[in-house]
Amino acid sequence: MSFEEVEMGGGGEEIQVKVLSDVTEFNPLALAVVKLSDARAKVKELGPRPDPVDVEEARKAILRIQDALQDQVGEVYAAPCPPGHDLERWQSSQTEKVKALEESAAKAREPYEALLELEELHILYEEEVKQAELAVEGMEEEPSASNVEAEEEVDEYVSSKLQEALENQLDTLDLSSQFLSYVPESFGRISSLVILNLSNNRLEFLPDSIAGLVNLEVLDLQHNQLKLLPDSIGLLSKLKSLDVSGNALRVLPASLGRCSALVEFIANFNQLEVWPSDFGFQLNNLQTLSLHLNKISSLPPSIGELRALRFLDVHFNKLRGLPSTIGNLSNLTVLDVSSNFRDFAALPDSVGDLVSLTEMDLSFNQIHELPISMGRLTNLRKLKLEENPLMVPPMEVVEQGHEALMQYMAKLWSESLKTEEEKNLAKSSSFGRAFQGNGSTEGWIPAWAGGSLVNSWLGKVQAGGLGSLLGGGKPSSPRAKTQSTDDSYLDQEL
Image 1 (tube, helix red, strand yellow):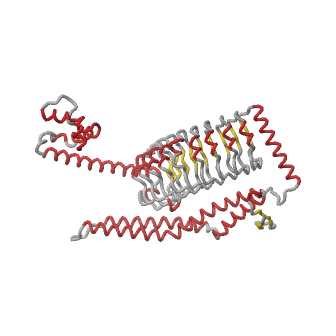
Image 2 (image 1 turned 60 degrees about the vertical axis):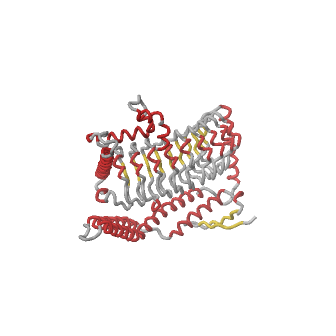
Image 3 (image 1 turned 180 degrees about the horizontal axis):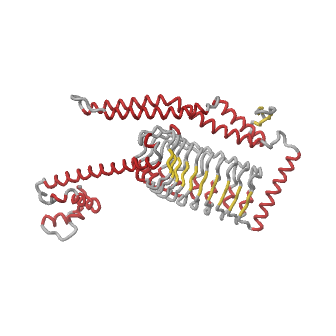
């Protein structure tokens, strides 16, 4: 069996610990020191932390670049077409100019954005170091006799607590912060449990016997070393709250979707890369979903099936956007998609359908334009937009505060509706005139009816087929009778 030495510094004497290469036989101190060493190595690789003054200047520089870009783009679009020039070609050339300006601005922002990203990474990794140092504190390099006795006392304590819960049919069991590396299979026999707290231990796995906790409603597993959850967890049909934050989960078992009573699911500070594609169809009662500080790059369309969802937090992931089905979450009140940085560049128009939304955090992304549909969000009271290269709405509107911003978006939405209505009216009128000018139908559609009668007629055709419209009553003529008796043929031809 091979060994390697790990050194730990940090202001005191260096500690050398022999770490087994076979990870199945590690001791807790060795693991804690390895984690601390790894966290410090990450910080070291980043280099010196940026000066706070430089960070603030970088933020201001990005804002100046965006302001300049906005002015330049405005000048390009405001410029009239020179006499004698082909309008379409001139507009195309103007579009190319805007594109070149945006690319130039993006290049100018790069060093400042890199500085801000470096600052964020320092914050993240230094927090890892802090947590690792706390884990090492209180541990000794070699297990002493007192440590062995303490472990035995812990085992005895846990065993006595399990026995007590089983004999007295307790509904609550708290085994948090007991240095547990495993829980025995027998704990699945305590079917009376409603609340189980196993947080702040060293658990790497849970036994399949957890399925025996048929009345369990609250399960707290945060701050352990779990890499997987057992498939049998899906048998906890009464489970309402599950917290697995601060573990090492990369995937979630598909069976978790069968926990249909789940109201709250928290999985922050893990290594999750995907949200399972079918969970939205199964977790009909889910109201809180918190997945921040993971590695999720996309949310599946089925997220729109979480109709009961009220709180969604996916900040500090690698999201490239949101699916259009997000608009189906009509009960959502809080949405946090901040700090996805350069990966997150746009919001779908359907975000305007989130009519219950009161808080939304979009800060530290790469959003250039808010969808006009956001003008519909009349309940939105808090909107964070810091560190986005916004062009719509312009920064001078954003700086005026939330009320001015939402008034601006509402105006854009109103103007958009009016323009669309005018287009539709023009199309309908044109369609009606076309019918009036046709030989066999001349005089059939009166001029005052415009397009409304045509639209009504088309609606009936789509709803019931042409036969249902022409042959629904008593035929008034041989021609009508022929159409009535041959509806299926006409429908097929159409």
